[in-house]
Image (cartoon, rainbow, N blue to C red; front, side):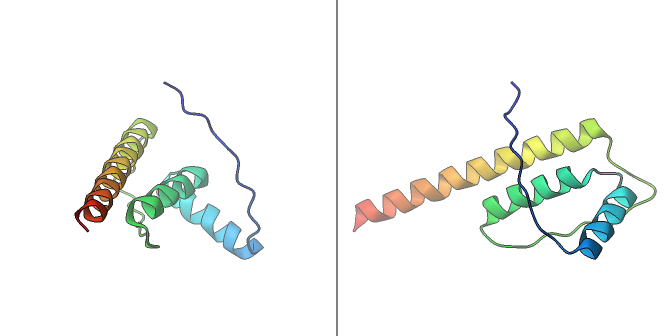
Length: 94
């Protein structure tokens, strides 16, 4: 099943964009995939935190990266539903 894609238009400092693109290139990952992964992690954790380090010896293939992102999305949905259920149950107990 193909997921619908949407565009997000952002205004960022030119230097930030350039450095982000360079860093993404070092990691061998398109910047759009990094931003998408960041947003999924932001949703899952409901906080802002992201870290990745370049590793010249091992870079993810596109397929590995897609698998990783699908698993991250599944974890985010599962955790969201769990928190939602816990919240609903705690409201019922009151």
